[in-house]
Length: 281
Image (cartoon, rainbow, N blue to C red; front, side):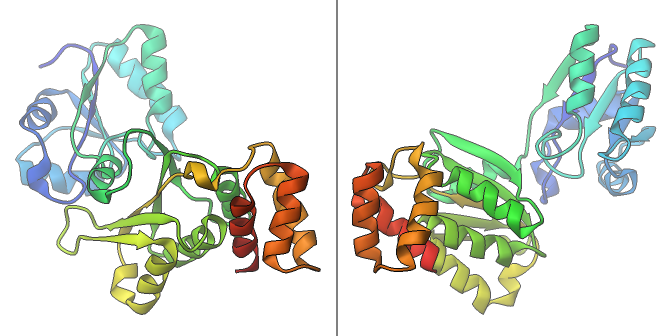
């Protein structure tokens, strides 16, 4: 058996062969395995030939169950934390548990491996030197649009998770907020049988998804290129610019409105013209 330690263990996101030899060893030697869905993870362990006590730990019970896990660690047990797929804590529960272990001096060890976030970025063709992972987009349209508008001037590659139920809504909002021509990529069902990767402008990707119902099934990683320097406008002006452009566009063509906005707020006319096109879409 292992010493009292919390092991954060990555598991496959689809292809079982992606699990590491170290992960198999740790899962086979710990006293207890904490999992989001014990039935789902039980199937994985069965395929690996591992039989261990399992403990349900997910977003709806993580505070109470976390305290129980800490008590077990303090009593000398070793525990592996796994999620349904990929690396725990990446849009999955576990932060509170790991934080409390640090505060109590309980060792926390990473057993790295598959991650949909990193897998998608590595094949996206978008810049990966700087990126921002935003997790799942908000479910409601208003909150989703508000978040995207707050990110429209971010120069980093933006990464989102999305489900099949909301993928079209998400792409429509991305297209309207970031513009038809912003470069993007969509990774679907990574490492699984029907894995696909679509790259291109947001307008093009939205059209391709609309035309093919099969491309709207599964689990998605959405990636959007960051703002280029030639698209920029002063950060402080972005919210004010959207308000001003809405007023100007009610009376003027896009080019004239963009020229007036650039004169009043500063920055490039091109950036305001692109904003005008987004607002009129």
